[in-house]
Image (cartoon, rainbow, N blue to C red):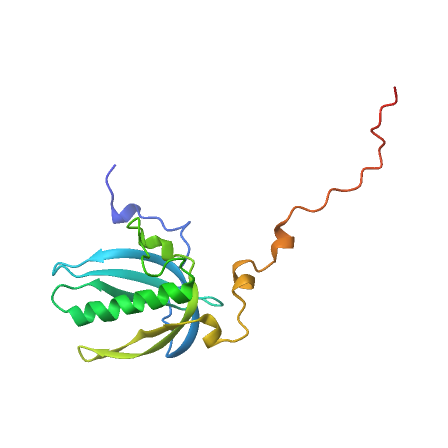
Length: 170
């Protein structure tokens, strides 16, 4: 079966809301995706996609972890990654990917500061720093975010009292 635009039917496809980039300022975000990316020039980076915890706005950061041509760029990227891991609660920020699996960052929650960044004459929003979520909002409760109903709500209800006497007399 070959594809033709004439036969394209979008009847059961939802309309996309698109993504809205986080504006300048402090935000609490959760990592929704993290993947490695290797560039043609040999540079390797971690692409980290984030969404604000109480909303739908997003931002992506490209963290350079290896750049043989610009050691300072590599140093800055590694510092950013360690800071993200530290504030995201990674158990070992010094060795974050022992199994080459950058997806371990998914679900991490932390604070970020987003600011303007000019590149090639265009101004875009960029993650400027990583920080603790409580630095952004001192009342933020990570446990409530991870388990909004509380552990009690997810526990099975206590068994109902059985009034039937199951004792069998002998």
